Length: 272
Ligand code: NAD
Image (cartoon, rainbow, N blue to C red; front, side):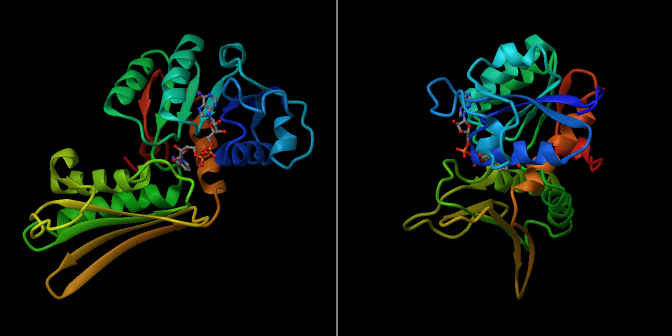
């Protein structure tokens, strides 16, 4: 560690993404794991975060006291749960630090509270932190604009591992939002998130979602634009959680010298 390394706290340090973040920060220049946090009652509190992540002991003991860690740190990387993320946004605002949020499944009320915290914290939130998916979003927006709703139907298909608890995925919703932007419509008014039984024919201009769950799939997404006699498919496959972790660290470094506010990965990657 050098004196200028950005001091980062990993919350949800025992989770799939938490462990990936610990390994990724360890391997990247310019950043250091300053603290690791888990929820109160977690059996991993008191364990060495590096050891849990497969690195061997690193001297960072997992704690359940986030504010004590935040006030001494410069940034928080958060892939936890909506309730945890809302709490951490408030604490990041108190500590006036960077808060990178990868957590998905947040409600509109959760998002409003996170945006309120962005008056004092520098928040970067995205349903997907990878360069590839954010580029796919830009391409989806262009395709949805070029291929209009009278002749082209848009469906977003996703598959994830069997442990995932929210649906459709944050990435599927990100891609649906991009398609809606391209069409100049509000996704909430046009999305069809589930189909079952006698649904009648497809409503023109709607954006459909289909969700598959199983095995250990890290993340598969396709945006299908279906026309009469032809079909365009834009897709992304994640084969390593490291892409999300590297994106989150890149976001923290980017936000380090920014003003308090609410940002997305499109800002970080210069795709906005
Ligand atoms: P996981 O269940 O393996 O890990 C979540 C961890 O967070 C657990 O260890 C849990 O104990 C901890 N946690 C939950 N609430 C907490 C709290 N209040 N305080 C402290 N710790 C808390 O899940 P995962 O697969 O690592 O995914 C976590 C989240 O990240 C999900 O919402 C997932 O959809 C999202 N995700 C986002 C991206 C992205 O690029 N944006 C990529 C992958 C996963």
